[in-house]
Length: 132
Image (cartoon, rainbow, N blue to C red; front, side, top):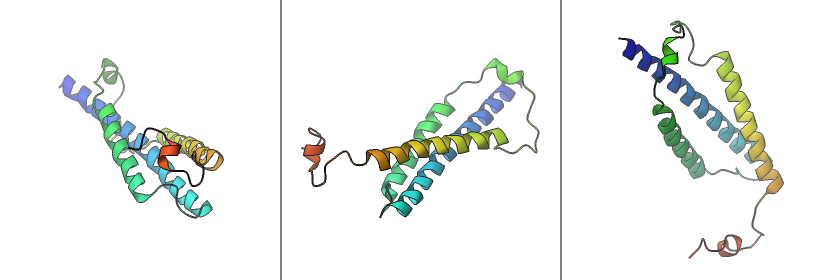
């Protein structure tokens, strides 16, 4: 029984971390796509790129968070009440802060750095050795 409680709390914590991570990544990606489309003539991320980002982030995050084993500290804390929402106030603040940080960093890369290739350059000139 004790082991089941420990694993249940571990699964709950991992689900909360996964939801936090996914919300932060998807919120910043959607904001970047909408904001970039409003400022630029087209979105900096295509639909296929958004799907790839989502697929990669889903698989890597689920692998990383699902493999975390339960520790003895899980049994020392009090159980969460049934009425407690999955996203606490602290988690929402974390998601918004992390999404804002990602959005600022990506905006600087897109609007300040811009393209790394000169206009009219072929892929072989821009990234030598990557095109055959």
